[in-house]
Image 1 (cartoon, helix red, strand yellow):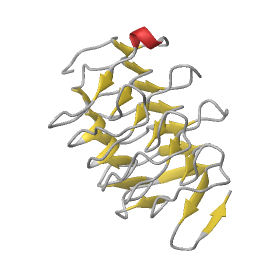
Image 2 (image 1 turned 45 degrees about the vertical axis):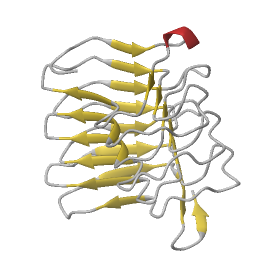
Image 3 (image 1 turned 90 degrees about the vertical axis):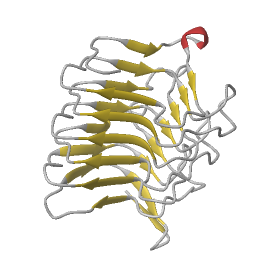
Image 4 (image 1 turned 180 degrees about the vertical axis):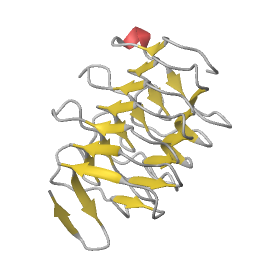
Length: 214
């Protein structure tokens, strides 16, 4: 989707759902300064039609490049985005024009119920590279993302300009029930000194220290 705006990919019913998998590039890409106001909702990106078996995409599940004010929204209970299955990263933000995007209510790295592993992305669950002012999660239960089961960090930010991003209310490492933990190796990690992330109310599990923290 290049410089396209105000589109909806998916929807809140089973019939509106897209199964986007086995691509030799990204599952879905939103790119360009005019690509704004787009909504990705209720899709299985990486899993099969049941949401329980990984088919994967070679690169990112959702890649947003120099595109502002788009939403990856899984807050409708019957229509979450499942963004899972092996690749270089499940959700990726890249570029200084990637600002004001929101990722809420998604299962990133798990199956459709959020209770079993379907991840193993090497870069991690969410990668923010040089992109400022984006929001991961929210203040309600439905707005939280479950970001789990990755061989890399749950959230990683890096590069000049990756500032003023907000992660709030997410389960990073734990699965949806929070108690039977499915770890990501690192919960949240700024890679470069110029990168910054505000962390607010995330439940996270860090395998390195083998403990959960609020």
